[in-house]
Image 1 (cartoon, helix red, strand yellow):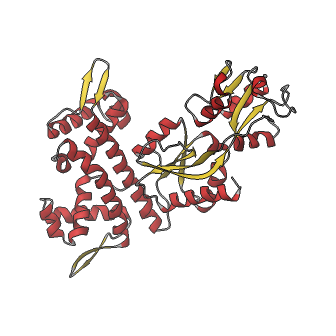
Image 2 (cartoon, helix red, strand yellow):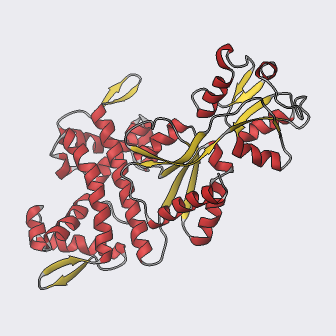
Image 3 (cartoon, one colour):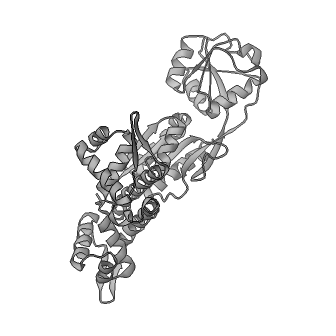
Length: 391
């Protein structure tokens, strides 16, 4: 693992930029032996030389260039957020302090933060207090209802998480130089992608990258988007939002999907053609929750009279399948997902008297994301899969 010693990483960049141990030491106000020691420690975990020592100075090796690229990106994220609170923090903040800051915000409690980090509660309290002392202001407001967070503290926590994610990416980049694999690719999977687009891409990816860790997270769009923006998720696969929810993400359309209405195989509407809205409204339904693209189209389908009164809101295809098979409920689902259920004989599609508008399905990533080679491969396989299958 690349050690997250911020001082050592700043020294790495200084040596790369100045090509001199002496100049780097003077710039960061440390001794030359301290610089030598820092570079040595980084090289011991980076798997090889980071610099070629020549008479003309220190020149970064391919390994050093790869690491410096990620470290620069990390500090480009971190330093503006630190300086926004106090310029002094760019010189004094430590990894331990920043990890405590993140844990306290996420748990909203010092005791829970300590448990997450595996340290004592006083240790977390001291780390945050030291940050506040250096900043000359409170970063958290203690209230009877918990811990409040200012906008600048929230921005700093997000910057810390993104910076640390860049260091995770650095480990993957360095491993790739040696033909190895490191780190974990984290995918946020929206409902359609779990059964249509993602499985085939992951099978092909595993053949090409047998040792690469992949984590697939199911969840609500808003939760996945928050994880993406903090760096906890690398890419979201599924229905896109129109317009894009915020300017710091990029949406890439892969194909347009349409909706379908499903029922159990014994439902009285199975086999009928051009079923109209008035008849559909008389049945109970299970549909995704309000605010999702599918639900928006479902509500619009029923027009001014409004949707049926008897509705169960749920996004799980497994739950929908079981309810439809055991009752006269109807379900509204992506046609791509519906085809998988119908082709296996699990459910039947109802022939509805309408033409559903298309909805874009694709990839959502951070606007300034620089994927590793393994992540780029997975994106390529997702794109190819959509094209090959005519989606």
